[in-house]
Length: 116
Image (cartoon, rainbow, N blue to C red; front, side, top):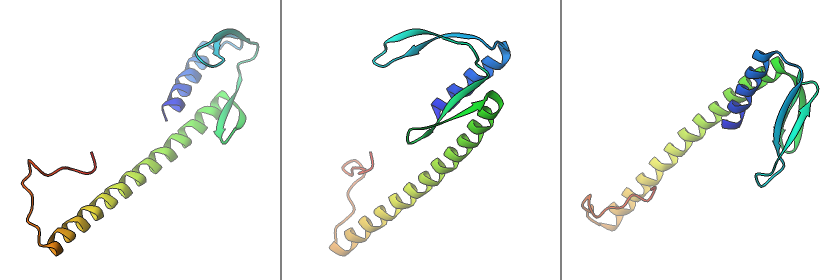
Protein backbone atom coordinates (compact mmCIF):
# COMPACT_ATOMS: atom_id res chain seq x y z
CA UNK A 1 0.00 0.00 0.00
CA UNK A 2 2.86 2.36 0.76
CA UNK A 3 4.20 1.98 -2.77
CA UNK A 4 0.81 2.84 -4.27
CA UNK A 5 0.55 5.92 -2.06
CA UNK A 6 4.03 6.97 -3.13
CA UNK A 7 3.06 6.48 -6.78
CA UNK A 8 -0.10 8.52 -6.22
CA UNK A 9 1.96 11.43 -4.84
CA UNK A 10 4.33 11.28 -7.82
CA UNK A 11 1.44 11.26 -10.31
CA UNK A 12 -0.18 14.23 -8.58
CA UNK A 13 3.10 16.16 -8.77
CA UNK A 14 3.42 15.29 -12.47
CA UNK A 15 -0.10 16.59 -13.09
CA UNK A 16 0.62 19.81 -11.18
CA UNK A 17 3.69 20.62 -13.26
CA UNK A 18 1.92 19.77 -16.51
CA UNK A 19 5.27 19.02 -18.12
CA UNK A 20 5.39 16.25 -20.69
CA UNK A 21 9.16 15.86 -20.44
CA UNK A 22 10.75 14.48 -17.28
CA UNK A 23 14.33 14.11 -16.04
CA UNK A 24 14.81 11.76 -13.10
CA UNK A 25 17.07 9.16 -11.51
CA UNK A 26 16.27 5.45 -11.77
CA UNK A 27 17.41 2.79 -9.30
CA UNK A 28 18.97 -0.09 -11.23
CA UNK A 29 19.32 -2.15 -8.07
CA UNK A 30 21.51 -2.16 -4.98
CA UNK A 31 21.01 1.63 -4.73
CA UNK A 32 22.81 2.22 -8.03
CA UNK A 33 21.11 5.21 -9.68
CA UNK A 34 21.42 6.54 -13.23
CA UNK A 35 19.99 9.66 -14.85
CA UNK A 36 17.02 9.10 -17.14
CA UNK A 37 15.08 11.34 -19.49
CA UNK A 38 11.45 10.59 -20.27
CA UNK A 39 10.33 12.41 -23.43
CA UNK A 40 6.58 11.81 -22.81
CA UNK A 41 5.39 11.43 -19.21
CA UNK A 42 1.69 11.49 -20.10
CA UNK A 43 1.46 7.71 -19.66
CA UNK A 44 3.12 5.42 -17.14
CA UNK A 45 3.48 1.68 -16.62
CA UNK A 46 1.89 0.39 -13.41
CA UNK A 47 2.77 -3.00 -11.92
CA UNK A 48 -0.31 -5.18 -11.54
CA UNK A 49 1.52 -8.03 -9.85
CA UNK A 50 2.97 -11.37 -10.91
CA UNK A 51 5.27 -9.56 -13.36
CA UNK A 52 2.45 -7.90 -15.34
CA UNK A 53 2.42 -4.19 -16.18
CA UNK A 54 -0.20 -2.00 -17.83
CA UNK A 55 0.27 1.36 -19.55
CA UNK A 56 -2.12 3.97 -18.15
CA UNK A 57 -2.64 7.68 -18.51
CA UNK A 58 -2.13 9.68 -15.34
CA UNK A 59 -5.88 10.01 -14.52
CA UNK A 60 -6.39 6.29 -15.23
CA UNK A 61 -3.47 5.44 -12.96
CA UNK A 62 -4.95 7.53 -10.13
CA UNK A 63 -8.30 5.74 -10.51
CA UNK A 64 -6.53 2.36 -10.51
CA UNK A 65 -4.57 3.28 -7.37
CA UNK A 66 -7.76 4.33 -5.55
CA UNK A 67 -9.45 1.01 -6.41
CA UNK A 68 -6.35 -0.99 -5.48
CA UNK A 69 -5.98 0.81 -2.13
CA UNK A 70 -9.64 0.19 -1.34
CA UNK A 71 -9.25 -3.50 -2.19
CA UNK A 72 -6.07 -3.85 -0.12
CA UNK A 73 -7.67 -2.06 2.84
CA UNK A 74 -10.69 -4.38 2.74
CA UNK A 75 -8.41 -7.41 2.51
CA UNK A 76 -6.32 -6.17 5.43
CA UNK A 77 -9.42 -5.62 7.57
CA UNK A 78 -10.75 -9.11 6.74
CA UNK A 79 -7.41 -10.71 7.63
CA UNK A 80 -7.28 -8.76 10.90
CA UNK A 81 -10.76 -10.00 11.82
CA UNK A 82 -9.80 -13.58 10.91
CA UNK A 83 -6.64 -13.43 13.00
CA UNK A 84 -8.61 -12.09 15.98
CA UNK A 85 -11.09 -14.98 15.67
CA UNK A 86 -8.26 -17.51 15.46
CA UNK A 87 -6.54 -15.97 18.48
CA UNK A 88 -9.80 -16.14 20.46
CA UNK A 89 -10.32 -19.78 19.45
CA UNK A 90 -6.78 -20.70 20.51
CA UNK A 91 -7.25 -18.98 23.85
CA UNK A 92 -10.56 -20.82 24.37
CA UNK A 93 -8.95 -24.19 23.56
CA UNK A 94 -6.07 -23.46 25.95
CA UNK A 95 -8.52 -22.56 28.72
CA UNK A 96 -10.45 -25.78 28.01
CA UNK A 97 -7.24 -27.81 28.23
CA UNK A 98 -6.38 -26.18 31.55
CA UNK A 99 -9.83 -27.03 32.86
CA UNK A 100 -9.67 -30.64 31.64
CA UNK A 101 -6.25 -31.16 33.18
CA UNK A 102 -7.40 -29.67 36.46
CA UNK A 103 -4.68 -27.05 36.44
CA UNK A 104 -5.11 -23.88 38.38
CA UNK A 105 -4.76 -20.58 36.63
CA UNK A 106 -1.26 -19.21 36.73
CA UNK A 107 -0.78 -15.81 38.31
CA UNK A 108 -0.63 -13.01 35.76
CA UNK A 109 3.07 -12.27 36.38
CA UNK A 110 4.12 -15.84 35.46
CA UNK A 111 1.70 -16.24 32.56
CA UNK A 112 3.18 -15.62 29.11
CA UNK A 113 1.23 -14.51 26.09
CA UNK A 114 2.03 -16.88 23.23
CA UNK A 115 1.11 -14.26 20.63
CA UNK A 116 3.84 -11.73 21.36
